[in-house]
Image (cartoon, rainbow, N blue to C red):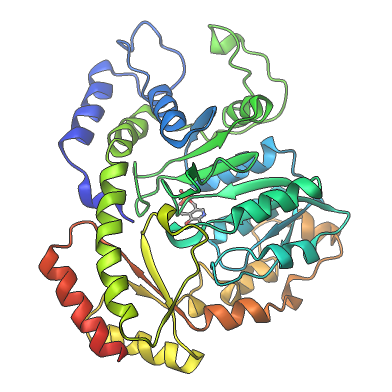
Amino acid sequence: MPGFELIGEDERRQVQEVLDSGVLMRYGFDGARNGQWKCRELEQRLAARFGARYAHVCSSGTAALSTALAACGVGAGDEVILPPFTFVADLETVLLAGAVPVFAEIDQTLCLDPQSVQKAITPKTRAVLVVHMCGAMAQIDALEDLCRRHHLTLIEDAAQAAGATFQGRTLGTFGKAGCLSFDYVKTITCGEGGALLSDDEETFRLAQAFTDHGHDHLGADRGADQHPHIGTNYRLSELHAAVGVAQLARLDHILDLQRRHKAILKEGLAALGRLEFRTLPDPAGDSATFLSFLLPTENEARQAAKALAAAGVDGCFYWFDNNWHYHRKWDHIKTLVSPGRLPIDRFGYGTNLTKVALPQSDAIMSRTISMLIKLRWTPEQVRDRLARMKSALA
Ligand SMILES: *Cc1c(COP(=O)(O)O)cnc(C)c1O
């Protein structure tokens, strides 16, 4: 997953171009900037590479999620269905939008189970927030179809799945809005950054205004812009965008390395006969940032995680106990502990997050281990890793 393994001369040259112009902000200063528009360039390249009509970059993946919710009209009291295996950002942004998170179960794709989503729909449901976890896709066709039938807005969090596809279509382009992250540990990084993808002109228009205090960006002079609605500052700087331009150019190479390393490890582990792998609705579209496998029982998964660590196999995650990615350790969120009172706490909206029970998700995640696929492994290191894993898991 980490593009930081490949930061080099191209990133340096891109940043130097911005520093040479002296204009570090994405808007205005047209005369001084010497033709450098790195945020715009990154947006054009993202739209072309991902196959979206519009791309808008912003300061983080979390900012992209907040922007997507706002641009899709999600607000106070609206219910948003989302998975319990995700990143805390998805919960945070829903709560801070004043909306109500409603969990549905995941299935063995490690992403939302369409049947469980259907059961979670109420008259207050406004959107379904699909999170493509650990490099690969949810059953996005079924979820897209479900949202269409129920007139719900589909939003995609593809922060962990940059470049992954389903039947040739890039993840992040199925929903009304799709979110990417370029934080330091993502597939491509610019230190901190994110992007919103959309084919919908109105969503894009609202998004680009929302991330810049509601500026409509219609005139040549930003200072004279109208402000049709409230926004905030989620702008990306030109310095960050410059790194992003260089990293995006590396995406195909990164995907190729990940896929080659993962294929060797997966084939070798399959021979053990003891593991199941995460279900991939379209294996060819997997970005291969992680290899995720399931042991027969929770007990065996816990033992396997310990054995892998003891064998020096780094980069393995037992998510069931993880406090960033799985709901079981989110007490501060479930009890709505916040510096200031949240709308859901003030108004209730009939939801009690402490009562959430997700037996199907627990049964899957308690058996799942994911291993991060690195880019700079040598062929010998991949072989050595496979040998250690096989003996640890035998
Ligand atoms: C990283 C991540 C985010 C947030 O992105 P940031 O750029 O770190 O704010 C959101 N969702 C998922 C699934 C992530 O992995």
